[in-house]
Image (spheres, one colour):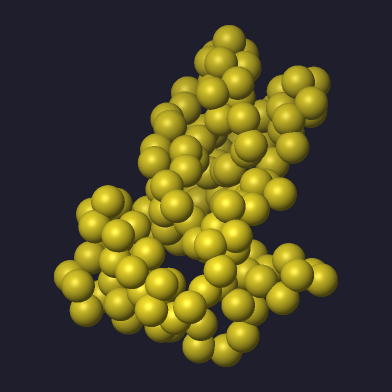
Length: 146
């Protein structure tokens, strides 16, 4: 499933992450997944929310520098090897994974993965065909935002 990821560019100084989170809190936005990458001078906060258009407007109004990026997400069984199967499928097709982040949800026995790949539509089709071949239930992807 393709979803919209928001990336906020943050100066690497004390309090910048809190400023973004406070803005989201003031607008009653709940983050579903999040990753922070940093360099010496700045960081990139990547996150998934259930209302990306609203959050984009809120953060632009608050004058944060941001980008909206389509990414691929999937829900996996939270078991050894389930991620490897999908990554090998993409790798064997020549699709490059630029980055990803993942998290397991306690009580669901599922893990959620967010992938940035260089061939988004091809990856989605490939993994969709793979899921059908594995007889996975479609509902695994439709409840991403839960």
